[in-house]
Image (cartoon, rainbow, N blue to C red; front, top):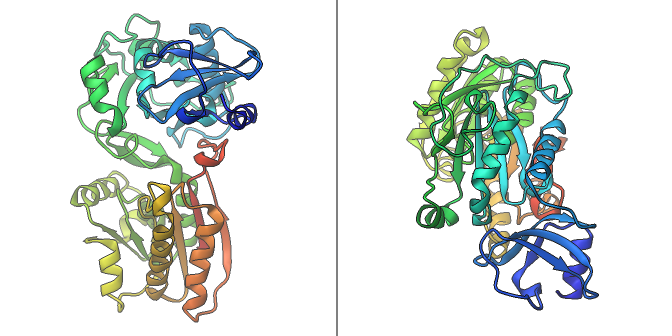
Length: 425
C-alpha cells in the first residue's frame, strides 16, 4: 500500500482505492474479508473486498485486530440504532438506522418506515454476507417496539402484525415475524446480484409481502413510501428537518415546490398555514404520489383548507418560461446535478441559474429555499452560487440560515457530505 493511502486509512477514511494497493498475497474474491498491512507488515485495517470496483476495499475496522463475526455485526448494528436515541418521538416512524460508512457500514444503509425496514446496498461486496446480515437485523427486531424513554428511545410504534417470512433469508432468527425487511440494490450491482446470488431489487427478505407503498409518520404527518421501486429507499428522509423549517415559514404564503417529488415540502407548508401550494415536477407518477399524500392528511384542518395545484413540466423550462407567476416562498430541491467530479463546474452554473429563476418568481418579501444533494459540489461553492444569484438580481436580501445533514444522516468523511440548503429572504 502506498504511504499516502496508509496515512488516509489511519485518519479514519473508509475507502482504499485499487491504485493504492502495492501487492496482494493472492487474488481476492467478491465480499471477502481482506486484511490491510502497513509498510512494516503490521495490521492496519480489515474490510470488504470488491475486485470489480475502483474502491477495492470498504473498511470495516482499523486499529488493533478484531474478529469480524456475528457478534461483532450485532454490536455494530445496535450501536448505530442507539446513536439515534432521543431523536424521534411517536410522531415520527420514518428515519435512518444505518448511514453507510458514517456508521461503520460502508456501502450499506438501513431505513425504517414503521414496521418495514429497507436495506439498500451500494456495493456488491455485501451480497455474500446478505443472509447473515438479514439474520442479525431480525435478531434486533425487539427495538421496533422500544417504548419512549428506553435506551433506544425510538418511541412506541404501531403494533406490528405477525407474519410468516416471505423468504428463507434469516427467517429462522428470533423475532423475524415481527418485521418486514426489503432489499434494495443500486443499479450498478443489480446484474451481479441477479446472476451470481439470485437476488433482485425490491424483493422482500423477511415478513409479509408488499401490497403497495407503506405508510409511515413524520412529525405527525402521514406519508407513503414506495419501498420496492421508489427513489433511494422509497422516500427522501434526509430532508425532514428542512421540511420542518419550511412549515414555520409558510403561513399565509403562496408556495412553489419545484422538483417536488411526492410533495413533502408542500404538505408541511400546507400544515403551516400556506394559502396555496404548487407542486412542479416532470414525473406524473411523483405528482400522483403527492396527491395521495395530501389525501392521507386531509383530516388536518390547515391541509384541507390549503389550495393545492400540480404542474407536470420540466422545472428548468417552466421556471424560465413563466416569469409572470409569482409566489411568496419558492423551494428548489433538484436531483444531483453533478454525479461525477467532471460535472462540478456545469453544476455550479446550473445552480446559479436555477436560483436566479427562483428569485424571479418571488414577490417582495418572499423566501427562497435552495437545496443541493451533489457531493461533488462543496457547501461553500453551492452557497456562494446562490448568494451570487441573489446579488445579481439587484434585489435586497438577507440570509436566514444554512443547513446541512439531518442528525440521522451523519457525514463522517468528506465524500459523504452531500446535502446543503440555504434560506434567503
